[in-house]
Length: 80
Image (cartoon, rainbow, N blue to C red; front, side, top):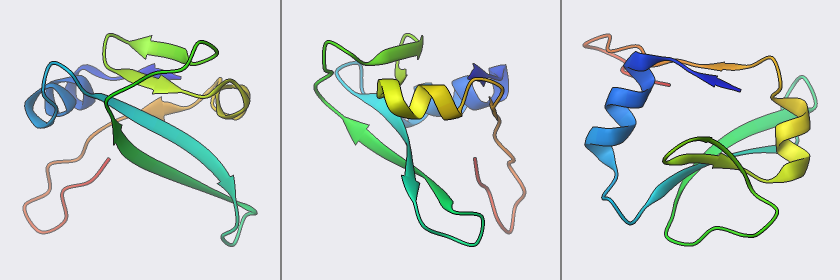
């Protein structure tokens, strides 16, 4: 997964130095998958790091190899 600079800047503003953003792919949704985000204080040995504070589990990483994490700062609906 590639994290854009805009997304990385927003993540850095949101998280403390002791936290990381976990991106996970789970079953469900219209396409069969749901991408979820959570703050994590601990990482696991098998986690894949995409930047200094963005990580995924190894199974989710396989689904996100060509994904781009970006951030839109639209005033009505800011979102990743």
